[in-house]
Length: 343
Image 1 (spheres, rainbow, N blue to C red):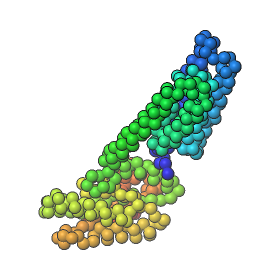
Image 2: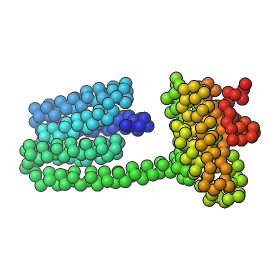
Image 3: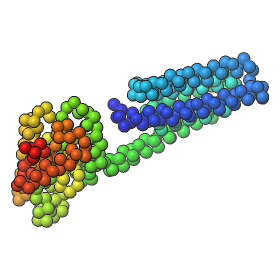
Image 4: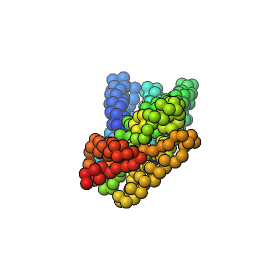
């Protein structure tokens, strides 16, 4: 399933590609008109047949862009593939009709393969690649010009076979590198948990998802972690953080590490009683014995509820933080709901 972020990127690319389509159509119409009426390279009858395709493509583009504006995510992948088919087929038929002038068009097929691969990913690029190969093989065997110039056509066929595949390999490597960089930019290297930047993004998404439901934002701070670091060393402290992150993650819907010994989580619930039970289990889970029996883990937890406490992300985080500090001041190893601070 395509993520919302990727869907938005695709819509942006659909707009950009439409401008390129219009530019290519305009240049092609001017060039074919020039070679028909100035150079007399084509007959007027053939010219009229060719001009049906720009009109058809412009009509298709108008309908396509109406759908993009009105229903940006409706059958998005399918409509992108359809436009790839329409462009490839129309270009192939214009090349068939234009005879010697078709020698100017083969580079468009490379642009289709590479353009669709860059804009919409390797899979869509490969589908376009297949369409291009089929269209070109048909041209080589039906177009009088390309039958006569078979050596030139086979040269382009080699280019179609090699260049897109090499490009797709590079694109795949680039995507893998981007994924690695994205992961490093959005995850804590020690615990593997999301960091504060990714958490903020997920929190925004949660506000949209739970417009008619509640969820709890939890700020969690390990008790006495500085003493653990001072007594046992930072390498043991790191192991404690990793173990704590596992215990927290087991009983929450989403958890991130803010830094140091501070964690933040989201918990879905249906009523306050269920939420309190879940937080009680979380505290017990954190308190489980460590392999080093000299180390005792516990946590102070602050809870703010959306939308009861606030509809603002900033205020929600602030109130969860205030509740956590109240838990610290009250003896640690406990939790407070922000709403209870006011009662």
